[in-house]
Image 1 (tube, rainbow, N blue to C red):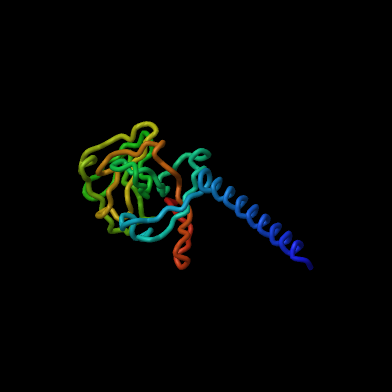
Image 2 (cartoon, rainbow, N blue to C red; image 1 turned 30 degrees about the vertical axis):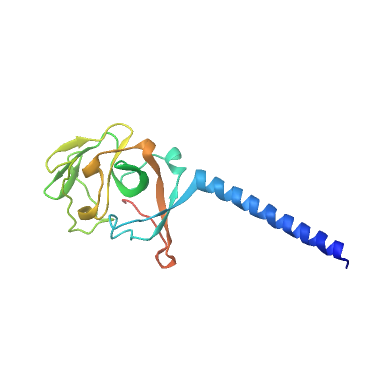
Amino acid sequence: MSIMSLIRKLYYIALDLLETFVIAGAIFVVIYAFLFRLFLVNGDSMLPNFHNGEYIVTNLITLRLNPLKRGDVVVFQAPPNLEKDYIKRVIGLPGDRIIIKDGNIYLNGELLDEKTYLAADSKTYGEQFLRDGQEVTVPSNNYFVLGDNRRYSSDSRDWGFVSFDKIIGKSFIVAWPPTEIRIVSGMK
């Protein structure tokens, strides 16, 4: 084998590798921009269901195909700071009437059953935007969201509703760490 044929083989190998990396990069960009994205849980506002440091896979396309449901976990641009992303649970849908009273949430006049994702003794109290005993109606194209760790969550009780255009996607898998991989569940 001559030096020229060796150089030619190395050139074709390098060209194949470059082509592979370009194709893989293009696929990654399409997936990241239009289909799925990883988000880091930062803080304790979603305990006990999501822990600080976990990575959540969020589906970006689902919002365009299926309406959000009560209990869905969503990632959105935080109303107090649009540079940050928050992860919270959808509690109120457009048109819902919400009142917090005696540590409980009432939705359209009925006690909201959250036992599928919260402990039975969990309590929810009002904050700046929605105070105890005050009723609000979720406007069209908006959602009322709460963290699962109600005592330590900055959520719709503090800063109000989240508009649909600020919602990035619906979370569906905890992907990291490997010992915590699981499907994200909502209400049953």
